[in-house]
Length: 359
Image (cartoon, rainbow, N blue to C red; front, side, top):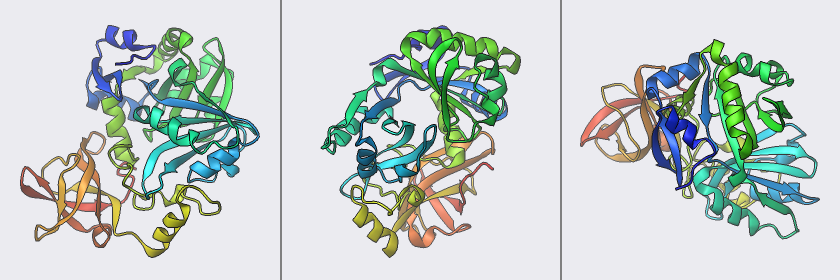
């Protein structure tokens, strides 16, 4: 199992460590609910250094990205980030990812930890025009500082004006005395904040500086457990749960990152699917009766017929109610539609709601 540059810090702080995507990661410190509320109302720090980073460089870097991703990367400019996915040849998704334009010929792709090798091999097979590719995952640390107080907590550490940064933009600058840090106004919590990328050797220095600077704002370390409840309240997809090699971006409600103004892997089939309509769709639902939906639970109609399955579910800390996501047959996708989740062989009533759950 791999460690991040900060594993010893987490252990020292008493984190409960679990294996995740081949890494030894902190799942919680003081408890998922408390950590969740820290991020929603204040500021918390996630070590997400297990994520993968690839640098693509050269005259044909954009062309390669355009051919393998679903979104239109030609719309990017220096300092802009884009959410996208890598479609496979069968209508599913190899991975979802972020695309950073560092300059006209240099891009950084940020991919899921469990898919680093898979994504690298996938992109590499389309690299027919000599794009320089570097997998910098093992030497790069990534911290997500999330919450409404993130800008205030971090501002003394950098000359970059954090409060004025637009969502899905980034700047390179000095951070906590370290040069060349990528400071990105992105995140996976819906609570605002920043993600910062830097070389492993500076991990302890940057971690300590963040906690020192954030002391006045009661900054706390946050585990992957709260990351999951936070993203679920926003209706954000988790690869391996809500999207995978068998789910299409159209079914997953990711039509907004699937641009047919260019040709990319399987774009013709996906366009036909968009025009014809899909048989199942990813929806959000909240429980009407008591019960917590979990991954892979069956979704049924009032007569007990199978109409789909749960992909993610939890008791949402900010909402004080149980929520979930899942694929259902298209006739059950309308807001307000009654569905039932089979929990221990008992159909428990739920209803379809719009994303995000937490407004």
